[in-house]
Length: 271
Length: 271
Image (cartoon, rainbow over all chains, first blue to last red):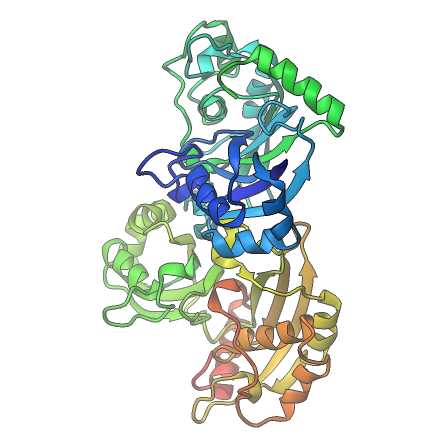
């Protein structure tokens, strides 16, 4: 008998070549797979909510694997501590829980939330947060960035902000795109959508930074939504400011399956 | 003419052999000195508020240097950005300001505040904060730790918690020693005193962790204050959980000088 296990993950993306396993590269999926080989032998079908790019972090990543029920039962009581002992300190399994077979980490997800951290302090990024904070060389005006962000919220074709894949839609529903300045002066963008295409969050952030430091006018980022292909003027913000902080799922099993079916039909590749 | 410059510093202590310059070692004072050679040639007398040990971090360290007035005037307007360009990303000069000659970063200080971060989550430290958060393998009870901490607040001879130096007093006035649990579950100790002797904060934290996980009774840490020498039963907590967050100074020049004179008389070595 096989059971489906949901893994809630956090990682510091600095020393990873992104999520997806690649031969000869250190990736989160690769490192996690090695730990799974020891802890839950016979695991299959690792599926992740957000395939983060190289250098992108996560505090709330979610994936699922299918494992033989006896392997799971042998470790279920102490599985989090066992993962902690097996994994390197830059990746952690925060929780591991048995879920209904209808749960699909990628296709059942209702939304993903990312945060992007950037500082415009003249001294640069706080040393202890330099791994997840971009240092921006010019002062940023949060109000301008939020005004520009308003025009990007909603369901749009984000082709201008996506690396295009064949036969994949670039229509996405951005539910939230909002900047705040924290008490320590760091600017944080909260970006939430049903899903994102590749490099989309960093492209949105890059466009808003150009507004924030006065190089582009407020209407510019929304104006690009009329394009049918990637806008080369948009500078993709560096990966290290970006963290996947949360993935939301329906709370009941019937809804999980319905959502997965719907998403699969809408979006073959991409996530 | 010579002017005195106060430097407000932040650093990630992970890759430093502490504050003090040592031949053949990478230290904060050494790296800062190299930047000063370029930016403020002719500087002398670097003096720091808290000589942090290897691996200890700072967000609010303070030091002073004396520099030729013409060297200072040549860069004063852009000094923070220039430091940012010269220094490695694990050390930052947050501010550089001309101060009265009576200001002494070490002897004028009224108090130092440190924070110690520790997590008892079964999965260990959050990857992006693992450099400044200790992972503790057993659950901790904050109330027990705060009850025990009460007995340590006040002016005492902290010989049990100090590495003794010849002819130096180990009497210190601890103004605050308080644990809180943050929303993310991390426990943070705020520790404030007029000054600390070497490894004192980490020794206090080590004693309180032993209470927090139930290995020692609540009255034990305060009971050690009757000792006249270092208590070998106290395990010094690892350096990476510790950050110097703030140094307080009197606000006017007369008081700066008075305080410095008083401290010099009380405490020849130590800080």
